[in-house]
Image (cartoon, rainbow, N blue to C red; front, side):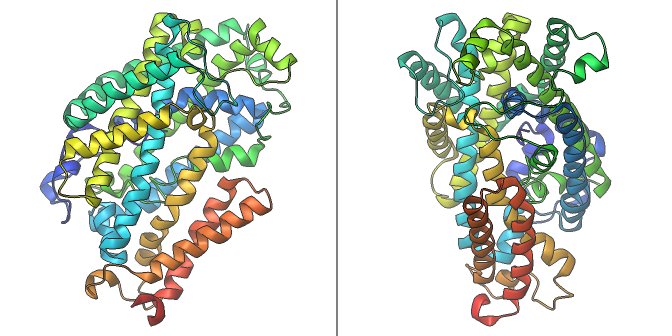
Length: 469
C-alpha cells in the first residue's frame, strides 16, 4: 500500500527539479523505471497489518480472494486511464497543477491536511516496527482494541525508533531512497516465505485446503465490522485513492514517456496488495490456532494483531528483521514527504527542521496503537478526505472545455483561494460523511460518490461568479 518507496532516480528529480514547469523530454523515463518502483513500494509495513485485519472482519474466501483481485484491478485502471493520462499531458506536479486551478492559499490547506495524514500513517508504521523490536524485551503487544500506550517499555521503544527514523529522514531523501530500494526485495521475499511457511503450518495440501482457511467466513472479531465482497473490493480499490483518483502520483508519472506506463502499477497491486496481504493473513491464521489466541476468543476479546511476533513465529529472526525494515522503509520517506508538505506552508524553515517536526508528530502518533490497529478505517478516511481534490483536476481536464469554464482559473485570475473548489470539496465531503455516520455506511463506499459529487459541483460552481471570485 505504501506510496513512498520511490525509485531513487525519479524521486531525486521529482524532489528537487521541475516543480513549477513541465518535465522536459530529456528527463523522461521508460516503463521499466516504474515497474521496479511500484513492485517494491507496495510491499511495505502496512501490508503486515492489513492482511491480518482482513481476517478479523470475518471475510469469506471468495470475498477476499476475488474481491482483492477485482479491487486491485480497478486501482490499476484508475492509475492508467486517469493519473498517467493526465500526467503525460501536462507533466506537472500535483501541487503545481492544483495551484493553477485552486490558488496558492487553498493548496496550503491541502498541504497541511496531507502532511498531518502522512504523519499519522508514518506513526502506524513506527508502531509496526515497535512490535518487532519489542520481542527480545518481552514487551506486551498492543491489542486490536487498544488505543493508548500499554506500558513504559512500549513508550521507550516507540520513542527510540521514532527518533532514529526522524533523524535519518531529516538528512535527505537520497539515503532513504537507496536504503528502501535495497530492502524492498528482502521484504517481498519475507512476505512470500511467510505465506509458504504459514501454508505448511496450516496443513494446506491443496487449493481446497487453502480456500477453507476462510471458507464461508465467520463472525467479525469484537470491535470489527463484517466485510463482504463489496467491502473488500471497494476498500482495495480506494486503499491508494489519494494516489490515483486523488492525483498524487501525477508527480511520479509526469516522468513517463507514455501513459501506458500506468499499467506498471499492477506490479504493486498484485505483488504487494494481493500476495502480501494474503500472506500476512495466513500468518495471522496460524496465530489464531495458538492457545493464547483461542483463550482470547473464548473470553470474547480480539487476539492481538502484532506483525513482529507473527513474522517471528514463522521465520524467526529474519521475520522480525523484515517487519522492522518494512515499517522503516515506509515510515522514513513518509516522514520526509510530510516534511515537504509542511515546508510548503512555512517555506523559510529548513528542510531538516520541518522533517524533525513531522517526525515528532509521527512518533507521538506511533505511541497510540489505534492508528495501526484501525488501519483499515484510517486508510479509508485518508482516501476519502484527499481523493475528491483529485476530481477537480480530472473534471477540468476531461470536461472543463465542454462545461465552458475557464481552465486554470486561479492562475489566470491571479487568485489565491478559489471558492468554487473549496465549496465543491466541503459540500461533497460534508454530505457524504454525514451519510456515512448517520446511516452507518462503510466509509469507502462513499469515496466514489464524494469524488464524483466534488467534480460535478466544481464544474457547476465554476460557472457561478459568486463562488469563483
